[in-house]
Image 1 (cartoon, each protein chain N blue to C red):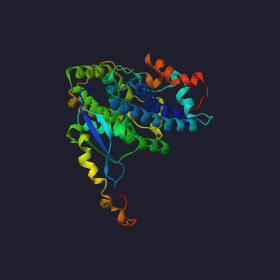
Image 2: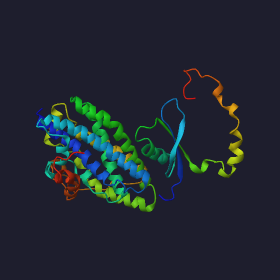
Image 3: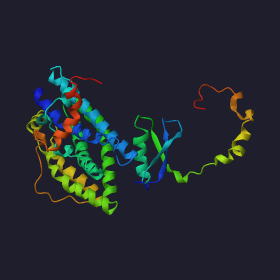
Length: 93
Length: 251
């Protein structure tokens, strides 16, 4: 069991919402990862749908590059949609 | 049907669930890894939840001011009517899974039939339990396949567990006097009719797991009459310790 790969777990907490990253766990294969995710992350009825993906398939940005990647966006306030009024019917924006 | 018979019939179902739940909860914090530990503990909690529903109903029927706790914690060994299978100790993970698998297949068939009972409360408990037990069966069947068709070592261990535990399975299908009375009154399930489906279901999974049912000549029984194996006393002393030491204590 020590050789089991790591999996990332995404859970949709209710219909209409997107899947969100909940955490990670170990499992021998995808089927077991789903079952483990069900037991570890949805035992208090947190979800209606689960995705699992082996962690090695995720390509992550390098924290060392965060300056060039993310800081240029910080002083561009006009990119935020705060200048519009949203109708009440639009939820989860 | 007299209340006393119905209460005994309920014990015959619920005590299995309690004792297996207790066995699984012994594993809390001792599972082979975090994920499996939580899975086993979840199943234990499902079973204890079902037990509470049964015992609350039995306590209400007894009408002597009894509570579910009195029934769970203050009976003597002979008064527990669980089968020998569920009281067998946790020897290793493969053994735990095999015991679970052998019980789950029966448990699901029983609850499916119990849905047709004339007793509304039992029907409600069965309907609620079926979803949980379907998952238990899926979990234990998957593990049987993984271990049976896994490494040489896991195959050997789970086959040995099966060889040891199979002799307790026949007892699941014996009818007690209270079972017969409950059946005659349209309340109880005829467990005799479940055995064929049970064997079929077990065999399907075992075939896939490359495991074989042992040729057992002598089947163990007694639990349904309250005559338990040597492990039961130790289990009960753990289970009952708090209530016996601090009578009437509450959480």
